[in-house]
Length: 285
Image (cartoon, rainbow, N blue to C red; front, top):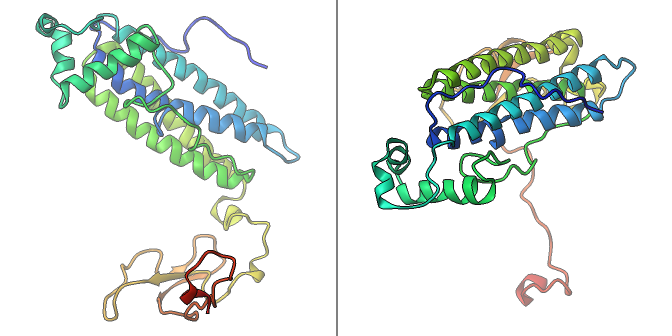
């Protein structure tokens, strides 16, 4: 169950409403890098968490609930930025500074009509669960595998791309209230990256967690190629040298090497088509 406090997690103030920026903030709500994504990802990881120690389930739920607060903050910011958005299309409206800013985009009519269709007609100048282009968030980017280590790496990636987006929004903001809100959200992204990596460390670090899943006996995998870097370049070309091409593997269980990728399998021959498959006669005989 959940408890609700009507106060925001962090103050959200807008001195100079900007409907263009409201549209940009939608990416942080319903984009693939956004808060709905991480909130739902952590929720489902928690709900599906198994194991003798419930602390990981609890930790995930705490952070998922925190992310609900982030969505609330962003939705509030979108609404406040739409305070002076135009309620109708009219030429004289372009003389207004904010309307002019909207119409100054690469595709002015698409920009202003898109904003009106969604933020005015559909939500009454409020946020919606979609990205900056109005594409609804469809949950296709939620990763909850049931493997704790795999999920933690997914979470690090999610927080990393989310922090990249938040930094871009911070740099694009001209309103001090928006910069203040985002500097808080950027800090939380910093902590969450550290948090998920701390779980990996508790699982034994790279040596203990890798390869994922660590419950599968490595003796049953191909011992010839489990630490090879496959060089797929043309004959005579050099593979890109790096930490991944030589020396002990990061999990301490193998040695990196370079393998010139050559065909090791046969030429596929699927045989004739079935008579009832609808193929051409020449394929059947």
